[in-house]
Amino acid sequence: MIAFSFFTLFAALTAVYLLFLFRIRAGIRFLAGVDIPPLPHHEDPRLPAVTVLVPARNEATHIAACVTSLRAQCYDNRRIEVIVLDDHSEDNTVRIAREAIADDPRFRILATAGEGKKAALTEGVAAAQGEVVITTDADCHHDPEWLHAMVAPFIDGADIVAGPVVYNDRSTFFRRLQALEFLGLVGVGAGFFGIGYPRLCNGANLAYRRKAFIEANGYAGNDGVQSGDDEFLLHRIVYECGGRASFVTRPEAIVRTAPAPTVRAFLAQRVRWASKGREYSDGRFVSFLVLLFVFLLFAAAAPLVTFFSLVALPLAAVFFLVKLTADTAVLNATAALLRQPVRPADLLAAELIHPYYLVMVSLVGLFGRYTWKTRRIGSNRTSRSRRN
Picture 1 (cartoon, one colour):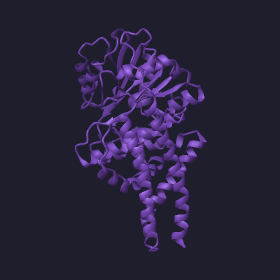
Picture 2 (spheres, helix red, strand yellow; picture 1 turned 180 degrees about the horizontal axis):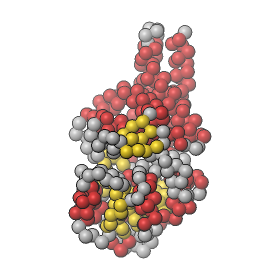
Picture 3 (cartoon, one colour; picture 1 turned 90 degrees about the vertical axis):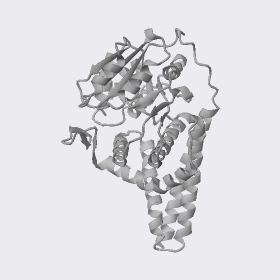
Picture 4 (cartoon, rainbow, N blue to C red; picture 1 turned 120 degrees about the vertical axis):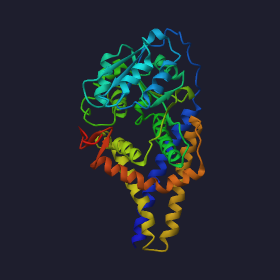
């Protein structure tokens, strides 16, 4: 009786999950079928002046490589500035950034007064001179045509533009699992754009009109939430201000970053991302997230139910195969769109841990506390950790 009731509910939740993935895959395929026009010439007067914001806190290991890739951008030097936003770094980030800039007049370093990424970005937008602001992270690498590719949609009237982010290191099994999981997140975000319902994006590759940021009132109202500098702004510009959003699939637009070095660092990052879930205001989207969480909870519990009934074992296997097939379809579509590799063995391993990992991260993100770059975070408040 327990097994029958369980799998009856699980079947209903699985139907919702499959419908969601069907829509996401349709959105990805739509983006893949869009004709990509040639990029405008670098000297095209329609290309706007751009300010690149690079928030950095304790990024001594990565900042030099990031600055080097930004110095190599193929964009009119008269219409680009790069501001490295130092968020109270406690290491040699500023010194290394200053050395990497090497008196390049397009670059400057701004020591932010506020604390946290959103405060840094707000101060950066206020200091920006460009019509378009594009944000990236200090641990990212960029193609020389990245800026060109990300800014081109503004010629056609876009107000906010999202681009893909992928992990550039797959040298170990753990890093490949991270790359696969992250590819899935990017694919879901791209799919939402493809179906005309942009919900997810990544601040490591996000551009918007400075005017749109101001009209949307920036991060006011959620500035105390440690994550969501990307998604909350996207939602405000599109759904509150009526702005036009675009997702760029050009290979030049792909930003590459490094996976987390340890399991602990990986989980801390994902928990931080999950913590913004309690601040979503779109009832439809929140309802979907709740259903998704319950589905994953059932997927995680399915093996345990097999202890109560022999019939439950083949049923659990069937549901696992259904989820594996649906997830694979979306991941393969995303991999083809962004030209990324997917190993079947890695995918199978990821599927086995996927429900447990997401349930745990979601719960800790909503109710727990965590440390991020020596700051203790929880309950929407940030404080300095006693640990360095």
